[in-house]
Length: 124
Image 1 (cartoon, one colour):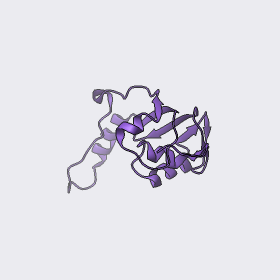
Image 2 (image 1 turned 60 degrees about the horizontal axis):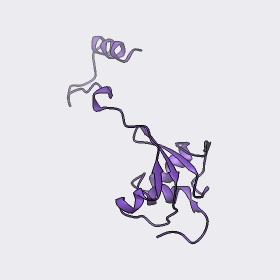
Image 3 (image 1 turned 90 degrees about the vertical axis):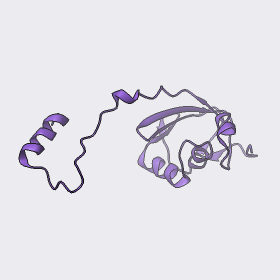
Image 4 (image 1 turned 30 degrees about the vertical axis):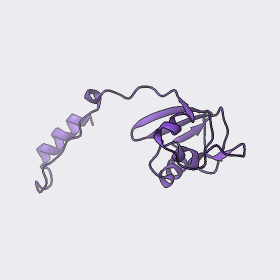
């Protein structure tokens, strides 16, 4: 399970320890600038070493982890939790997450009055 070499690709490691669902999502997050290693934005092929701090912004939440062990292949949830030290802030409570305005299916476009109300609600 532990790699023989001293480094692993950052996108592969993020996927292996289950911070993202697929490696493609991990690589896309790296390219979009949502992954930082030791404070610097990284490309998907960036080498990762034990002791590095990885910040991943995914699913509206920032995960801050310190690499303790390198893995190349995807592992189960229990072994994945042993591969890093999680320093992430706690997720926000469900009540504080703003609710998006939802229109009924087939209701058509909003009227001018409804559009103004939506803009006022959003604070625009």
